[in-house]
Length: 469
Image (cartoon, rainbow, N blue to C red; front, side, top):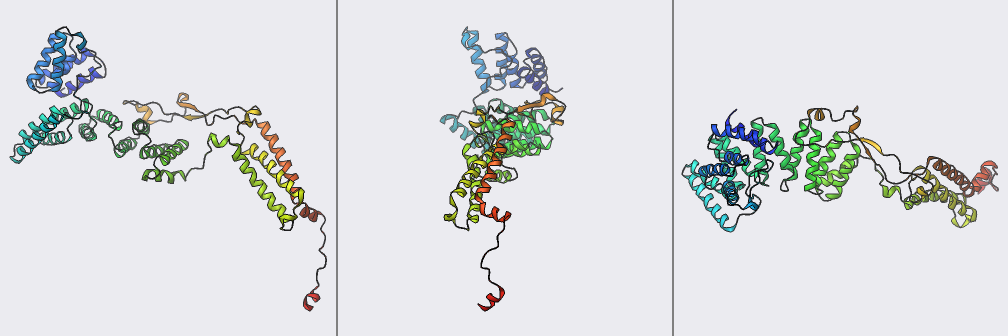
């Protein structure tokens, strides 16, 4: 194993596994092969308990780079510890990373002026074909602001041309470990990891990038698409769900989540996300796309609609309008001639219609369902997505819907409203039907009488009389 791989394994052992002993052995082996790795000395210092030896490691790093912000910070802390200032002693907990410069904070005006001068010097060096001199200026800029986008991009590009890929990776990871929120730095690091077949590291970087507040929805959707193309639908969903917590109600992300649920045949979840996307982005392209996708779904009632008495009455009014038309026709198309009984029939039709609607389509009206002893229906069972981490098992990704695994099922409450007991619904339906029959007899009285006892109309002219006229 070469020095760089030993270094990475040592860092991972310290950060991920909390194994200081293994990390110390790996970092020591790496530094024997490459003693000029300044960050290696700083990580090694994190694994040592002896204050004097820790300080020696920091001094080695400062000897390699006197401007290293990590080393200067650690030296100050170790010096305070050696002088008895325990409040500033640097903890040796393996889970804590080395002190990192604040990549998010904006440099001071003086620092910005210095950065500008260094960048100008780098341009001058390039004009004189002095690439290494330019690289030196860019690296100095990165010592001031570890995630300076222009300096990092320029230094990485020219170092890569010269074949110094380890130095490129070191600059990128310094910026990432510092807490940078510059998406282009992560994208470059991902591309580099992919080129070197370090797929797990590339995925880890993608996961971090997706939750950055500066990541655009295009970047996040591209990351999700990468997982989808590799058959890792659940990982893609997990990434988008985490991203939506940072980018609240982003319509493009909500739309993509809906699309993935639809591809996984989870129609209800897809509809919910399309609805959220349409509401969040009414005037956006993603919101309009969500509206179009919602047209493919049948409308679904909410609890507010299910429990509304007003909506049930509105449906019952439809029965009344129909019966009013029948009565109007029976009265010779004259409302003034309808009479009291026909109007009573119209009223009864609305009452009977309300009973029918309640029994068939609105059995959860508040508080009627509760009055008749209704209970909240049993929740339906649906497939649940297992929580995902950076290391998702291959079996879960390959077969996310194992129907034989009962633990993969979760209960989803479709409604929180009680529903009328079945026997009450049957009774209301029968009563409503009887009332409608009575109402029909009242509003259509003349027509029914004629149906059973037809009477020929009087004074029908003969053909001869018609001709004579």
